Image (cartoon, helix red, strand yellow):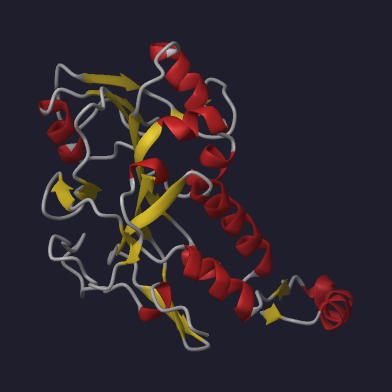
Length: 270
């Protein structure tokens, strides 16, 4: 249950808390609109290309890969087509996933760690900074990040140093649980996550993953999972709003019904 008034929420918590019912403060629409407007995809002046398969595991990327020597790809699962495509271009790939024993494909340019990526390091987890420093501590050139880690993206990137964030020329991030943005505590975390990314990068593409559908409420449509393409601001040659959704190179992730980017994500006029 979403409650807007803090006073009413406090009264309800005292009344129904013993019953095990949760009451969450609702996100105000102006705050949500401000966040969505900040994420409006840009036409950056650099064309998008598709890297990886036509389907799940493929991403739209600015055609500005040349000169990137290393890429990090946490979240391997059972699809490595994107990583193989980059490796075939001569890029060294660092992959990580505690849930599998190896990438789905083998390549001479693959280096694999059986760990999750998060906000701390132990036997099961490592941070992005620790991972990078383990292999290329002194490297100061541009990097690429592709991240699909089932919700851990929030803690992992909030914990990442500003120095490392600025090294990623391109970031491809699958963002989860977006249907919960109307819950104020969750919205506060997600908005801080995006604010950090937008300090150095801009969104140049959003692709809703049609695997899990979306939630429609209060005139909004919030896909549960979406793939964001972030491009570092110093590489952007113009800043115009993109208007074509889906992009001609977009492809559905699954055989389920297509899911097009809802209007509120590029016309947040509420």
